Length: 155
Image (tube, rainbow, N blue to C red):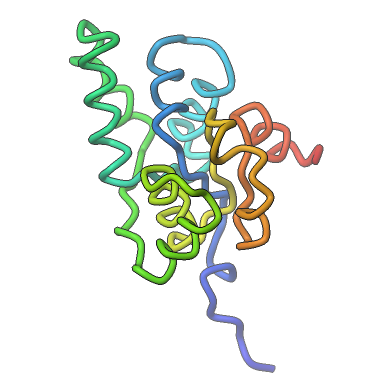
């Protein structure tokens, strides 16, 4: 019997791609599903991924909304063990743009797809959460609370 050498065969814990909205919520509040996901990363119970674009957007948002928290951002995210995913490929980006219709969010979905994550956590109900077209592409998307429910095996 041939050994399965796919990425799935080596994965030992769930991988979750975090959208900017989740990171902002996690940094603005010590409670809630968004912060719980960062804590799970800190405990090394999950692999947390982001893209460079997500981090750049996070920096812009935090500068605008909560500049006083910016010095703590790197420490909090560092403890959570965030890993930067590679830039998505053009074919994946084209498919997700068709599914999402909004380029910045399509980029997030494309990066998550190319990283082959188990889950994309977002608070964006306009373009990402509840988008059936993304499910058809094979991307599981939900809120941090939905993700936590999934991690508990309840969905």
